[in-house]
Amino acid sequence: MNGDKPRIGFIGLGLMGHGIAKNLVSKGYQLTVLLHRNRGSAHDILAAGAKEAPSGAALARTSDIVILCVTGSPQIEEIVYRDDGLLGAARDTLIVVDTSTAEPSSTARIREDFANKGAKYVDAPLARTPKEAEEGRLNTMVGAEDDTFARLKPVFAAYCENVIHVGPPGHGHMLKLVNNFIAQAIATATAEACAACAKSGVSIKKLHEIISAGGVNSGIFQMMVGKMLESGDLSGLKFTLANAMKDLRYYTHFAESLPVPAIVGEAVHQSLVTANLLGFGEKYVASLIEAQEKLAGVKIV
Image (cartoon, rainbow, N blue to C red; front, side, top):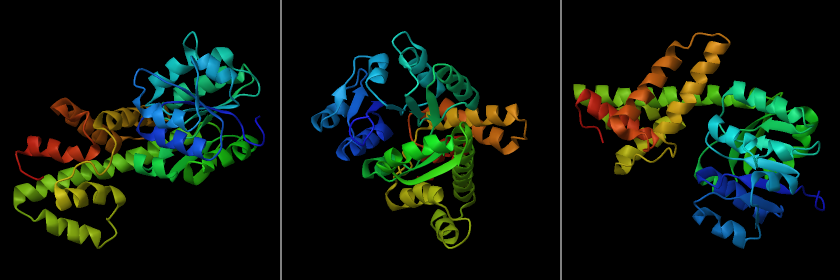
C-alpha cells in the first residue's frame, strides 16, 4: 500500500474506463495504466500523473488492486491468460476487479485460477453511461466476500454514486445480466411499439405523452423516444447494438445453465441479432427504431 491508499492498476480506457481512471487519479490514487494501440484517450490521464506499464504482468506486480474495464469474457480471458498477463504475476495480496459484463461460467473459472495463486477476483460490473463515468456517478453491483468488499468500497466510491454489495463472488456478473436483459426487453418493446404506431397512423408524440404520464414510463423509454422526438437523436443510450447482442447471448446462456425459461430473453436476443444483421451493430441501442423502419417499411425517426 502507498500511504493510506492502495496502488491501482487499470486496463481499458474506453468510453466507460476513461471516466473511471480520471476520477481515480484526480482523487489521489497512484494509478498505472496499460495502453493499447489507441493512446488518444490516455493523454489527460497520463498528464494528471498516471504511469504506464509495459504489460499486464508488470501492471499486476506494481499494483495492490487491478481494475479491468473491457467489453466481455474474451477480452478478460486474453488479459488474464496471455503470456505476459495478470495471472502469471498474481500473488496473495493482489485483488483483481472485473467491471465488464461477462459470462458467469468464465468468471468462476478465472476466480478459481486466481485463488490458486492466493489472489482475489471480484466482479463489479457497472450501470449508467459514459456521462456518469466522467462525473464519478456510476452504479456498481459487487460480488465479493464481506472483508474484500470493505477494503474495496472506498475505491468504488471514487467513481460510483451507488455501490451495492449484491452477494458473494459471481453474483455481480449474474445480476448484471439480469439487469441488461430487462433493459434490452424495454428497448426492443419500445422500438416495436413505435413501428406499430407508425404503420397504423397513431401519433408517436401521443404515445410518448401517455407513457410519460404513467407506470410504463422508464429511463430507457425516454432515452429512446424522448430524444428521438426532441431532435431525431438516436444516441441517448450510448451502448452499441453489438454489445447489447453479446450481453443477451450471455443472459440466455446463463438462463439455460440454471435452467429457467428464457422465452422473452430469446426473443429479445433475436431482435438484437436481427438489428445487427441489418447493419446497425456499431450504432447505439435506440437504432432498434431504425431496424424497425427497415423491417416494417415505415418512417419513424
